[in-house]
Image 1 (tube, rainbow, N blue to C red):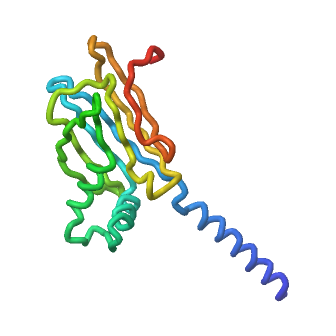
Image 2 (image 1 turned 30 degrees about the horizontal axis):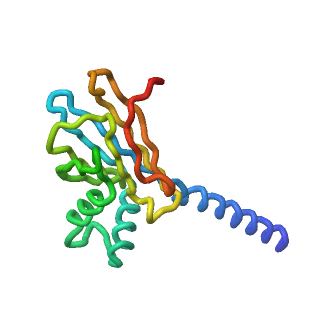
Image 3 (image 1 turned 60 degrees about the horizontal axis):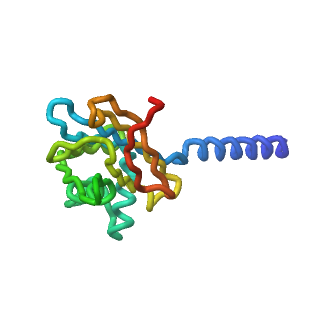
Length: 174
């Protein structure tokens, strides 16, 4: 009877371990949408990342305890995104206005837009959000707009520990 009980106990412990590892945070990914507003020709950016991952990255970089209760929470989130995500063309940064962020269902959703008209072709995108903190982090930037001739231009760029910068180029296989 004791042998049987210990076998059940071992089996239950094994399955609980499997469940715990399956529910752990094993995937690290984020998505940013980069769209050209057809009326203003300004770039509009929406980022979606796991909230506690952003908080951990800020805590690690600043060597502080960081959570929503921190007195500089909003400022540090803004500074983090502004440092880790930039756009440029011809080695000149494109200024981005910070519109704000919200936390929904554990996700930080941040909003930015360009201050001036800008077009997608030859736009250099730097996206290092969470990549230095989490080596398995993969970021996708989906883009949509028009090229200089007015033809639809859309696609995706992928960033990880090997690639933190990419250039939007017109592609013939849309």
